[in-house]
Length: 167
Picture 1 (cartoon, rainbow, N blue to C red):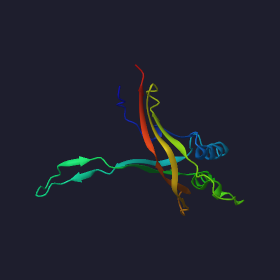
Picture 2: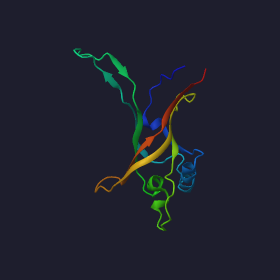
Picture 3: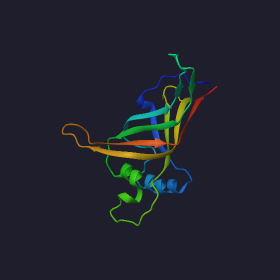
Picture 4: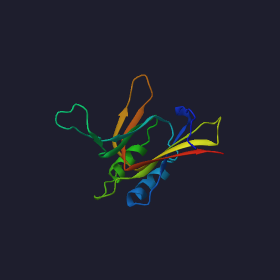
């Protein structure tokens, strides 16, 4: 049955999970070292799925005759009010270490789980999983009168959704 609950951002948990690829093993040591599961103090999490629909127009017609599915792009961003190097390490891998290491080394890859669960209805949840995530950009903001924030943008390979509701 489809989940029909209304959620708030405070109902969400952001978790990083490991895949079995060499890139996933690179992420595992960082996630365990920085205790990033679940990711603490996350805010402004956004996930986008963009399909490149292609329109086919016949000569002399104003409306398209067909919509053809194109490439699927999955991307988003995460903000975090805590600076400890974890997200930068997940972007650069061993390239962020003080002691330089011989290249090439894998860029960490992981699965990003967004779990929505309303405490008032604990038997119902929705989990969005972005598989094969790699961070693309990292930013650091040091405002004068606000919290220090870091943010990352990411891209993923594919996305799945699971709605759970107790019968």
